[in-house]
Amino acid sequence: MSRAYQKVPIVDTARRCGLVLDSRTLGRREVEASCPFCGDRGPGKHHLYLRTDTDQYRCVLCGAKGNSVTLYAQTHNLSNKEAFLELTAGGKVYPFPQQPTPQTQEKQPRPLSERHEVYTDMLGLLSLSDEHRANLLERGLSEERIERNMYRTMPKTEQGRRLLAAMLRRCGHDLDGIPGFRTYYGDWTIAGPDGFLIPVRNKEGLIQGLKIRKDDEDGGKYRWLSSRDMPNGTRSYSWIHVTGDIHSKRAFLTEGPLKGDVASFLSDDSLFVCLGGVGAIGNLDEVLTGLGVTEVVEAMDMDMMTNPQVRQSVLKVRATVQKIPGIKYRKYTWNPAYKGIDDYYKSLAATM
Image (cartoon, rainbow, N blue to C red; front, side, top):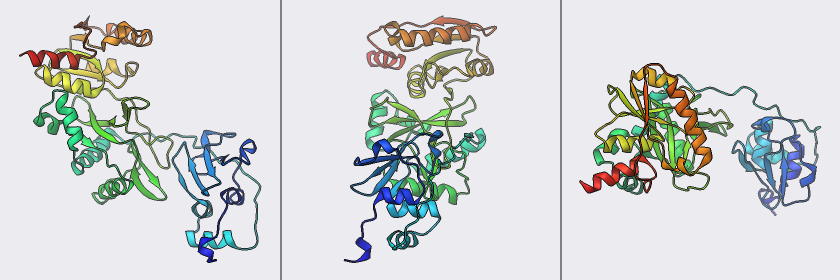
C-alpha cells in the first residue's frame, strides 16, 4: 500500500506533540486534550477534541482544526510533507506533556477611525442577498434606506471569507485588531455565523462595530461580529448605536441597532439611541450628554412587563439616565400586542 494512505493515529500524534491529554477520555471515540493554539484560557482545560475514527482535531474554543499531519506540522513548524515523513518514520519520540501557555492579555480593538475605514471598505465589497433584502423590506424599511444603512450579507463560504480579507489587505488595511478578523493557518479570514451585517454607528456616523442578524436563530437572533479567543482575533464591545436626527433634543431609547434603524425610519428620522443589549449601559450617559438632548423617552420592548430579568435591567437603565443633569425622562407605552416600538410604528404606517 502507498505510504500516502498510511493511517496516522491522532492520539499518537498528539502525544508526539507533547499535548496534555484528559486521561478520563482515553479510549473514547473523542479524546480531549489541551489546545496548543489558544492555550484553553488556563491550565487543566481541554478544548481540543481528537477524533480517533477520522484522525482529525478541532478546538471548540478557538476554532483550530485539521488532521494528524497538520497538527504535527503546526506544532513543529514543518511543512505538511515534512510532518508526514516524520510521523511515518520508524522512531518515535514522546516529549513530556507541557500545558500550553494561555493567552493572558486580551487584544483590544483598533481606534474608531481605523475600524470605520476597514468596515466601510468591507461593506463596499459585499452585497445583500435577496432573502435578506426581503427581510428588511418586511420590517418596513425602503430600498433607499436599506442601501444608505449599508446592510450586507456575510460571505457563506470559507473561500469567500478569505477572499474578502485578502482584498481588504490589498487595499492597504491591517486587519490585526479589527473585531471579526482572525488568522487560520496563517491566512486572514473573517469569523461569525451566516446572516446579514448591521453597522453600529456613533453620532458622527462612524462605524464602531457590526452586529449580525443570524440566519440560524439558535442561541439568539443577534451576535456581535467578534473574533475573541481566536488566533490573532479581537474582541468586540457592546457599542451604542445612534440613528436619526442627531440635532433633535428628544432621544428615544431602545435595545437593538436594527430595531432603532427601523423605528427611526418609520417616525420621520426621530433620534434613537440603541443599546447593544438591555444591560449594556457602560457609556450611555456619555452618549446622551454628547448628543445634547434634553429629553429621553424610554421605548424598550414590552416583554419587560412579563420578564422580571428584563424589567430589572430596564430599571437600571432608568436610574442611569435619571442621574444625568438637565435631562427629562419619561416612558413611552403602546399596544402590548406589539412587542417592539418598530413593530408598533409599522402597524401605524399600515393604517395610513
